[in-house]
Length: 582
Image 1 (cartoon, one colour):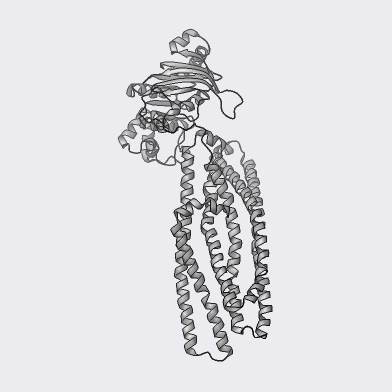
Image 2 (tube, helix red, strand yellow):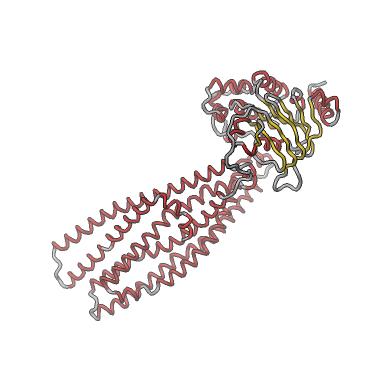
């Protein structure tokens, strides 16, 4: 019953639907008591040879009217109770999706996509069943079962009723035991399904890599093993689930045996009529559903409790970002002061960044260069406050990032990541993702600035071309430039390019950067790059190595200083000359 206490917040909100459905179920239960009484009386009339056509027609008419009423009322309670359970599923899905959108990137580094999807689908359905079938079974079992037992005891024979119900405590003990076993096993089965979901999601996304390296058989075997594990876990659930019906059926059989054996004795002793025994047996038949409903109740509720615990554990996962009670909300200009003493990921063995100090004035271009793993992408994440600085601070317009409303920082930056994600939609819709109200001419202008307009114009359907999931139909360079156009269209004060020109040639790279500097003169630019020719125009170049700044200055200053920057720049220039046949 703990799950119902946990869901009390929902039942309080939708109490009208549940109270109305329960009242209708009570009326249905009352009406269900009438036909057995009529059948018993008809049997007594037949036995005493007093049944007339008028009496028979009257009773048939009553049964038909009751049948029609039951048809309508059963439709209504389903509408109320199941309708409310669908609202619970919708609310939980909304809460989960909102939680996903508010959590930082570190949350997704710890959670697999398959697990998040399984919780949002399978576990939500299990909780929905608890608020629907679970409520139905317990209310109907209590109402109908209580009314039937009360009617049997008060109108027929309380002695026979007590004798008949002797096996019920055994059923209660066994079903409670099965419920505890089911709760544990169902949680394990759901976890196995999450793992399988993740495997499928990864294999579909990585199918190109799988085929390129000829790993189809290995991945197929891996999937079969995961699938077999899911089947094994669910069979363990099914073994417990399968115990409910035989147990309940056995108990019902014992009840019938006691009712017929002792009931026949009562008829012989003339303490009951044959019609009353017939009515008693019919009422016992009506008890079958409440007994089965109790078994279903424990089954559904234990599944729902296991799933609700998984959902709540996810929703109670707190953000790694420190919250502020009254965050500052204002439009930022792009004045940035970075003073990072140290930064270290929770799972990292050593510091990722250390002693990072620099300032960005409005409209300036800052370049981050260095070896792979030197901390450039981490610094980009800190600027966007995807994670918080361990010690030190990042200030925007003189306000510490932790004091600002997250929306302000998001509106300041237009970000183009290394991994260019495109939605399965048209090119125009992908570009306009950051600014849905943008006109078509604005979309075209952004694409022209990103040097991708000509490529799009060559497609048969132009800007209406569907790019496929994750932009699968486009080349790497086209995806990069569409991502840049998307960031440009958001009209940010600062554009962040995290090695976002690696898939385009040097000429296209130069055209994009020249266009940004010419047409977006007041816009700041913070970019990381491995091709040093792309950053030679920057107002400040920071050379990172092992998480700290080794050199800083303009291109000219760094060339005069010598060191890593000069060596790498001259090497890249030499490689470029060789590639051109020099």
